[in-house]
Image (cartoon, rainbow, N blue to C red; front, side, top):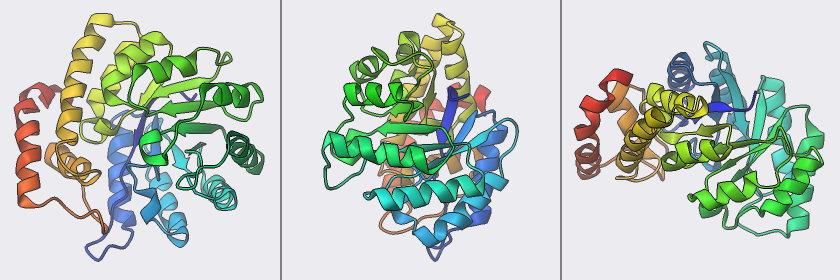
Length: 296
């Protein structure tokens, strides 16, 4: 099942900047125990470009072994080269991943034909479901809906998370997608609308801070509880504003600690918030505490 709530969790580091399997496992366990359907390791929120290839095995083992409840592990296999992405994919399968999530090759912009071949190589390298991730802000270009639809019809892609930031992008992916193709909203403020249009779930950064709120929103939207979904969507959108009040992704870690005592840990060049950055983030977050209390 590729729908429901996926939570792209952060990667946690020691004070010296090394991978911290204990903290990461504790974080994953809390998110899974809160009811998430999928925990996404090594996503953008997980600072995947900072994690060295030699560190991925330790991180994946710590995360996957810490799963609880019904949650499974999705693993990001983003890489600028196809050979590296394939190695990441095969390693994830060996470690017990349930699905792979891949942004298209970044920095240098390949042709659409080359992007398609990149995904075909990933498809052939494992037996796991493969989802693309449309993140033009970070990748530098968007995945064309026509390309996504073609790869979906070829059964190369099983789904897509859309983090373009506007509803029209999700609608374009949904139009023409074959039956059974999973589309997840990756923009926290668009979840209810996206699911109403046909998306099967969401991948929510804010669910790191208040996981049960994200779960409630997705469930209400999937159940077509329109009024309840609209109410929860407004709260999630306000929480997203608080998360974006400071530098990414350190503010997510900081607010998760504030909300439920989550462990934290940072690696340069994305350090802990400064006192002033903390003040700004809390100025946006603290007014929400009474509204968030039922979900904590």
